[in-house]
Length: 157
Image (spheres, rainbow, N blue to C red):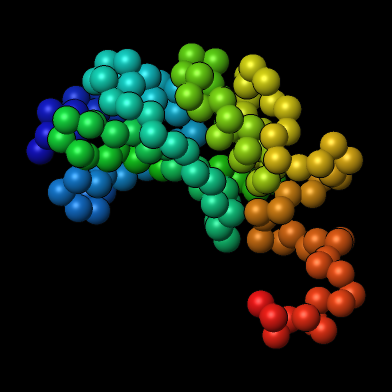
């Protein structure tokens, strides 16, 4: 067991650690622990925040926070599930600026609110994009398509 795993298990007994491979660990945590655990990996153990990904699953919105221990090539991924009927989680961007844009993208594309985010403005959608439409949600149905002539030209693609 790695020293980080031992320290993590002692400090966060509610965390469930799953070793996917020798250099990839997933740590499932309650959403209320995201700030504390992110700071544990980043500030206390010197891991680099790589990226964060969001997925609309049948059980809720899953957010994966990827942290890299560059000297070993090991990735520690914090895995959080938030409910679809209350898609909110604390933002880590106020103290970890590298999370700023990706949290904005997830807010815009999945409708997840990152509470306390310093600048939650859209990055990708048009200014007139409807506020209640999230293109990466499973139930998204576009109101605009590729045009009436798409089928006529589909063989070209």
